[in-house]
Length: 226
Image (cartoon, rainbow, N blue to C red; front, side, top):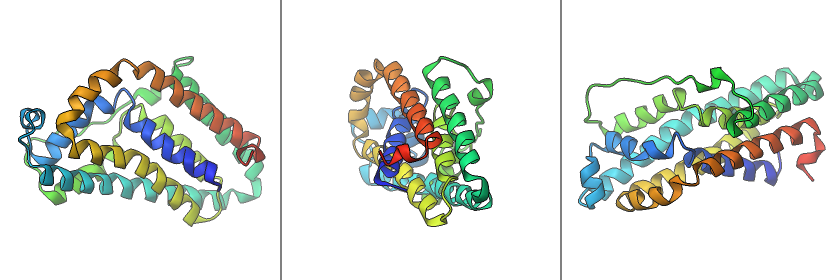
């Protein structure tokens, strides 16, 4: 693992946050986990403390899952260590397919499958915010799936569990920090969202190119150090 890998993981988390099927839903998630209405958030009358604490717990929830997945992927890497060169080529090829899917050059239908939880009660406790983040990580939207899958594929090429944990921790930071900052300044989010919305297609292309680059680096092995 190099600084390049960590930077890619962090940037991938940020791209996941601003992806077209995550960013528009952020106010709804914040509203649900904090129990604050969208009207209160827009007017700036909502409790910033309540929203911020709920957002932090929500981030900790999905980070727990991602880091656990990273540790598990590294464990798999240990089992495949004897055929690491072949596995790198396979993992790199899969990541490239993910990148082509996000850009729109090819369409993989199974990556557009989404699971949702229908929950009747709107009032969520602080513990509930953590559990919602935990559940959210398992049923995430199609835009995040390929990016997260690529990071996990990279992680599975490591033979030390701590490296996988570190890589997924930085991915979680890349996704979690913007989420928390948005929660703190949620009333300003609606204004900024209108400006970011027109760049959604560009964000998809950047995400796809990032994955394709990561896939090529894995296939050529030493390229990541370069």
